[in-house]
Image (cartoon, rainbow, N blue to C red; front, side, top):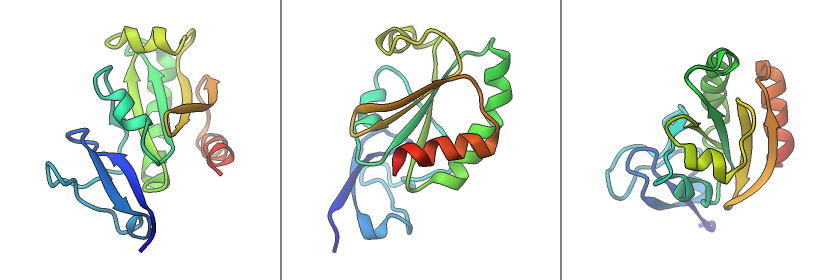
Length: 144
């Protein structure tokens, strides 16, 4: 058995340990019993943000706003990427209008802003929307 991976449930946000060799098979949350992988971005708030980005899997966060045209155009690209990148990478979204404290904490100056976190640390940041192939390339470049 391999070293367990620590990750937060996308539903109840509780931390879970999953053996690394069972990552591809997925798993269920020990608390709420729902799947640990939904192939959809997780909506994060100030209360749930740290639980997700501090886990062992890389997390790509899309900081966006409901009134932002480029954010709306990029949303389907981000959704499709979740289907392709999970379970090796988790994707999450933060509405900067509803979660202004998170926008301030990470000095978000333009939206969409994409950030990649590994074990709680920011490892990459990019402002602006990308086409699907470029977005996937950018993510893979920073998680390997």
